Length: 175
Image (cartoon, rainbow, N blue to C red; front, top):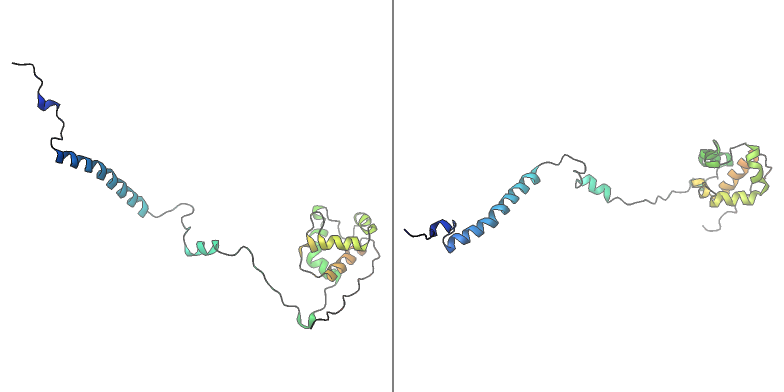
C-alpha cells in the first residue's frame, strides 16, 4: 500500500465547468428570487399605520390647496353708510379692549386711558391705524380709516376724553 492521498476526497461537489457555471448562476438567482418574493408579499399588504392614505385623491387635493385666498367684497348698495364708532368697537375693538387683553386699556377705564388721551387724537388714531405693541393694524379688522377714527373717538371719550366726532371724508370724485 502506498500513502498517497485519495484524490476523490479533496475534490468538491463541482466537477465540471458546467457545474461551476450553474452554481454561480444559482448563487445569484436564488437570493434575488427570495428578495423579490418577500418584497412582493409585504408590498401587497394593506397599510394600516399613519400616513397610509398619503396618495388618496382627497389627501393630494388638500396638499395642493393654495396657501391663501383673496376675497373681494362688494361695497354695500348705495355706497353704504360708514359704521359708527360703537359699531366698530363692538365688531373689532372689543375683542381686546373689553377685557384688557395683552395690555390693551379697558373700555371706560379712565386711569388707563388718561396717558393715551394726553397724547392727542392724532397719535391715538395713527396707533390704531398702524398697530401698536400686540395690536395689529386696524385692530385686525377690515375697516376704513374713517371708521377707525370714529372707534378711537368712541373709546377715548368713554375713557374721559372730549374728542369731537371726526369729519366724514369727502365723496370720491371718481365715478
